[in-house]
Length: 319
Image (cartoon, rainbow, N blue to C red; front, side):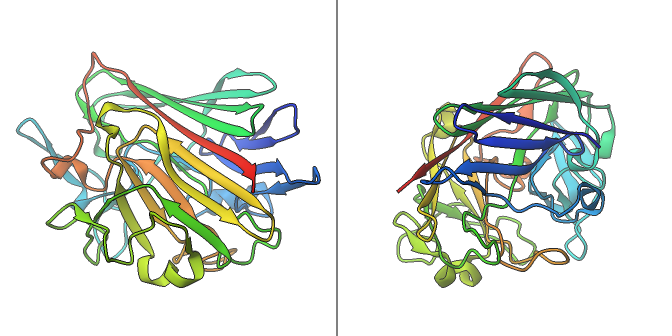
């Protein structure tokens, strides 16, 4: 495994591993100039080989869940591998998703790193050969931008995101003192397997899922746990703010923007082993879980004459 560091003129630096094309450190200077790592990470590089929590990784071909690994393209039934114990779902790309493979560096300089992977036809059950590029760029305004591109030689599906666990505090034991705001009026009701159920879009008004104003994580983490939000207006794939996380102790704020139509918010309640439950907070812009099977959700179909393109931005500032 090899790691690569990109940085800006303010010494914000991001360390990326070729195993899973994953962020293993995201260090941002505080008000005094001291670097604070804002993501959870393992203590050694070797620990990532046995990672069960997708820590910092690039997720694909399909982020989140597909019920029983089944969906149709035209009238053809597709069966993917199923790898979520107990639920029988296809989760985060399957048994050997993008997080469990080596990526190839195709472009690198002081502030940019681009990696690529080729997923062959039939990989985890997916039709078509999919070629994916993930480009990380650190900008001088303390923003980390991630660009995804992908093409396929057959009609297939694609849904790619990053699975970093954010913790803006210095001690990293808990996210209880964090506050979170999500720019969404609708959420997706989920069953016990975390699969969407009708009605697939519900208003957040008068529910615990209403995060349109900042909420203390300690008050909502167990009530919410893991939920998908609909980002209105992103059918046009415009970059917009989707969530903000802040930590009063460090005065650190993270503003997350994307052009994806959904945002998965996960409070890390399933973390174990090297980590504690609720030690990190995931905000994953992507397409909603089980989208290939839900009429009316934005399409995840990728045709051979199309290019998959999406962007996520993590902007850090003090408050």
